[in-house]
Image 1 (cartoon, rainbow, N blue to C red):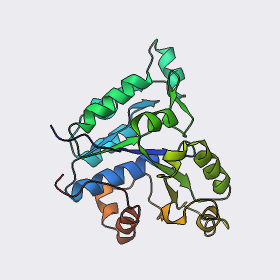
Image 2: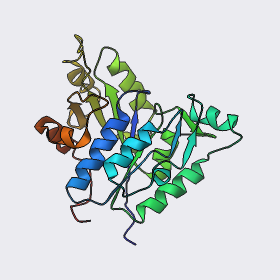
Image 3: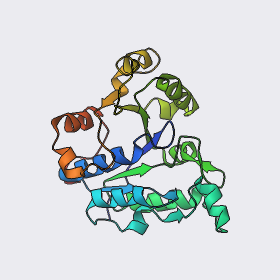
Amino acid sequence: MGKMQDAPLFITGTGTGVGKTLLTALLAAWLRQNGVQVAALKPVCSGGRADAELLATALAGDLTLDEINPWHFRAPIAPVLAARREGMTVTRAQIVAHVRAMQRHFACVLIEGAGGLLSPIGENVDSRDLITALRAIPVIVAPNRLGVVNDLRLTLAALPFAARNRARVVLMDPETPDEATRGNAGLLGEYFDAARILGFPRVPAAADLARTLRRRRVRAALERLKLPIPSPGS
């Protein structure tokens, strides 16, 4: 049993379908390739387990699907509502306990939220609550398109001060860039530390992780995140 990681990485976003799972999976696979003992978790999901299954692929069997995703519900609606339909509840204490248990066995823990920062995950708990309870470093994922500066400013403003000062922003390139795509990072940099804003090349949702990680631009983008991760072999 190793030393508990001080600060897990919490991958959240400006909403659903913005690329959180893909980024988490790529991070996990990349860290694993570099010799870091990494766990990638999607503690709560609803409407299917495809996200957790992609994380399981990235981890190559290091965790079971139920360890990655201990709470899953059938209805494709907000997890808290899906859980209620099944007569179940998920609490902050339960999620935090699961993450802490993983931290005792892995040098680096990645946690993917469900939906956006303030989307209810369980009873009286959302991603912001978990970031606070775990003292996690937020990684905010957003599609690089018109309107994203507003979405990101709102998300950043909703974070506690300490978390906001450690947050990273990842702008995911869309399949079809619009006129705002090129200038969004610079405009956001007028309100948030430009050094913590990262553009990420487009990766198709169904992309093969190993093949994607062979792309130079993808590897370079992961390195530019400059996340406080353990050294290889940890």
